[in-house]
Image 1 (tube, rainbow, N blue to C red):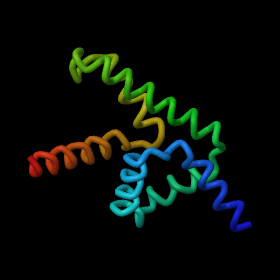
Image 2 (image 1 turned 135 degrees about the horizontal axis):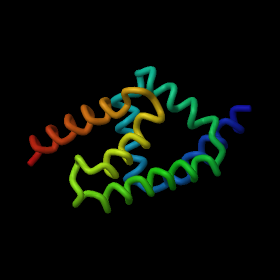
Image 3 (image 1 turned 90 degrees about the vertical axis):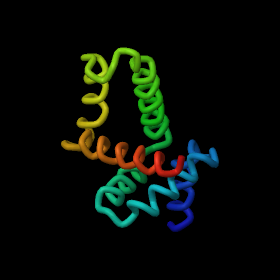
Image 4 (image 1 turned 180 degrees about the vertical axis):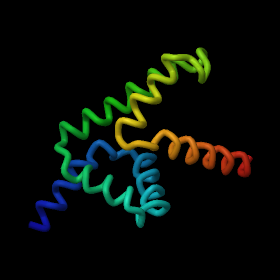
Length: 114
């Protein structure tokens, strides 16, 4: 049973072989590993099949690509706002505000390093 769980985890995180992604996963775990949101997220991920994980990764990649292509339109553009709403709030109400605050904090920390 333990080997099956370990194998399932390896299969799920197989797409995350890249060292940068491993680093981010560890950072996320260190920062938020004790929160309920992190624990719930990990439970959802552990239940995902490899195909579901790939679909999730592809969706995130496409969203990022669409947002990058829309940057010149500005933050108030209806398409940009629709992309933000589609991605963040469909997972949990208020996630967009959480992401806003987390990104603002990240940017503030980055400024301190420069």
